[in-house]
Length: 90
Image (cartoon, rainbow, N blue to C red; front, side, top):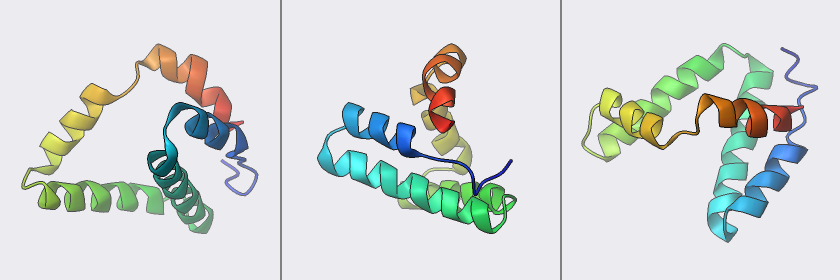
């Protein structure tokens, strides 16, 4: 994957169209930081994911598995991902 060539413009536009003010900007901020991390070393994304899940679990007095299950339940279907979101990554 060429992380330096990845352009988030389409995704950011979609986020801003679908979410309201502060929530949209927080999501954009998170994607920009994650992409910056991937550009340093794509393998850091796995570590970042684990760290974030653990921090969320601690903040919510839950387990990492519970956090991931909650995220999974709210996630889009595979078809919606392929049809709507994956193309936004260029």
